[in-house]
Image (cartoon, rainbow over all chains, first blue to last red; front, side, top):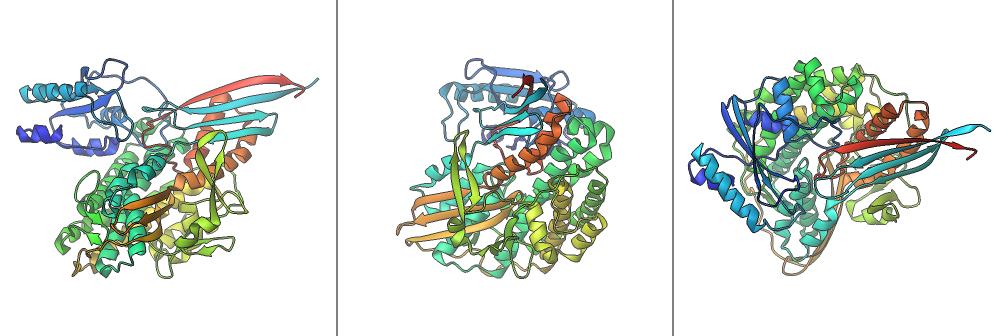
Amino acid sequence: MAGRLRDLGVEAETRTGEASELLEAWRGADHVVLVDAVETGAPAGTVWRWEGWQINFPTRRSTSTHGLGLSEAITLARVLDRLPHRLRIYGIEGRQFEPGTEVSPEVKLAVEEVVRQITME
Amino acid sequence: MTGRASKTIRVETLARVEGEGSLYIKLMGERVADVKLKIYEPPRFFEALLRGRHFSEAPDITARICGICPIAYQMSAIHAIERALNIRIDPSVRLLRRLFYCGEWIESHTLHVYMLHAPDFLGCQDVIEMARDHRAVVERALRLKKIGNRIVQLLGGREIHPISAAVGGFYKVPTKNQLREMVDDLEWALEASLETVRWTGTLEFPDFEQDYEFVALRHPDEYPFNEGRLVSNRGMDIDAAEYEDHFVEQHVKHSNALHSVVRGRGSYLVGPLARFNLNFDKLPEVAQKAASEAKLRPPVKNPFRSISVRAVELVFACAEALRIIREYEPPALPRVEVANRAAVGQAITEAPRGILYHRYAIDDKGLIIAAKIVPPTSQNQKRIEDDLREYAARLVAWPQEEATWKCEQAIRNYDPCISCATHFLKLTVERAEADGL
């Protein structure tokens, strides 16, 4: 997706999703769009859209043994006053997350749809 | 009749993929009746995936096993194949590989010390709560980690999934100026690491020591990254090629992962404590001094103090990176061309969380016919269970939630890579009273 966006003249990067890297990646940026795969139980290819200032994550003790992800990045950014002025998050519902599996046709279509929406912003 | 407390502590993963890891402890009175740690192991899948691929693809394929330590996988793969094919590399390439590892240790140790382990000691729910009360500390961690990222990015060729390291060298090497541009940042990082050692020294550690077999690489001249013999405090001193003669992986009923043990002896510990205890004399003076000031002297046998030992290794990684950058001359031959031939090779390198073993058998076309990968967490798995067997017995009188948290903290001492696909653990504690059991 990042490659598709760059072809269309949008500044885009691929990141691991690790929280501290995300905080650094968007440092100083005013308008940031994040795209990630999600699993909510909806049909594959469903596109979700949230705003950074209003998204809330389920309260839980963060007990990761190995890393902090997107939800921690956004919550930590709020605490450290590092949330971009405008942060939009697109979630694309996936179906298979096992290593080596192909991207499903539904997800490929959703990627194109999200690319279209981002370029219109 | 006296009732005896029976308590079950269960730490379950809520995985994005499948149920990779969980912890189950059952206490009967003050006796630990059962400890079962289950860990999912992505490397098993990758061993199969590697078969039939050309050896030159192994570094990039295995780097995908772990998002936190891809360099370790690249380094073990590259060294195993180079040992198989008897490749000699340029001395500057060797230095760059050490610098690459410095970057990964800085990233990984900073993440674990500050963002995953420290909240346990400060009584914070997580790093987010910690940031509210200790904002400057978290800001320091973010800056330190970014400096590690920068090294990895420069040598790896890109931000994620590094691709520049190769069998025989690097596809692209940095200029002297590119490395020198990092000196100011690394000098700051060295000071921040020293502050990290001082700061972790102020934390309170449970009084808990175990009689471990520590296993780590040892090199005659340097603190270990990529080379050295594998040694232990119980007399082991072997080449990587002998690894499978001395270590055996056992199937256990409760886990689909394999438990690695020293043949004839049992569990062992790999990672910062083992490296520190077996290689203290190879640390630079600045790191030795910082350790002494924090009252860390080998052998450190309290696994909770691993947070401080990781901080000492941060000092080492920053000092070593500065040394390498100051000495660096670009290699005359950044990458040696490697011809196909049938061979077998093994290598062990020091991932941030401990030794990582790779073995490859290659055919005369350079295709991999067999691969074996033993990651550090599967080597520590049995040891974590053994720690919990001792530690959990102290927790009978603790409130349910705290007992569970304490157990989780004990697991976190090992910085385990339970699964890179697993984003968090859900904790469930069950308590029951059983009479006359």
